[in-house]
Length: 114
Length: 110
Image: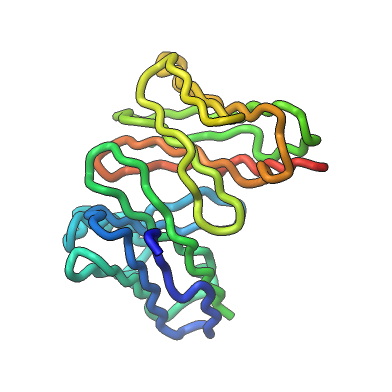
C-alpha cells in the first residue's frame, strides 16, 4: 500500500525484555516521527528524523529508548528492559519535508508489557 | 510551556445533531493548526489552518482559526454514526514540533 506501515500491530511481552518496533514511511517522505499514545492521553512526541539524522531526541522518555533510520526510509524504535509504564500505542508518521506539511500516520503498534 | 487544550473531553449526540469541537493553544511560535480524526487506529488528516478567519470545508466538516484569540473550532453538521471517533488537534510550533491535545471523543448515537 501507499500509506505508512508499522509492525508488529500488536506486541505482548514480559517486563524486562527488549522490543523493536518498525516503521516504513510513505515513499519519498523525508521526515519521520515517532509518538506514544497512552490511554486517555494525547500524542507524546518521542523523536523526529530528517533523512537519517535525528536532530531532536529530547522526547525519548529514558535511555532505554533508542531509534534509528537507515537509507532515509525504514525506522526502528527499540525499547530495552521494558517496564509496565511503557505499555502504550506507538505511532509513526511521515511527511514530505520539514516545511509545514501534514503528517500521515501508520496504524501504530499496541505494546503491552506484562 | 507550549500547550494545546481541547474541549469537551467527550461528547455524546444523536444522528443529525450539529457539534462544535474546540481547540485552544499557547505556543511560542505558531506555524499551523491541524485537525485529525482517529477512529480505531491511525489518525487521518482533516484540515490544516494557517490564517485567521478563513474557513476550511470538506463535506459536513468545517474548521476555522482565530489567531488573535488563539483557538480553532471544528464543526460537524448533520452528524452520522460514522463520525464517531476521537478528534485530535495539533499545533505545529517549529520545523518538526507538533503539540497534540488530548482529543475530544465523539460518539454519535443512531
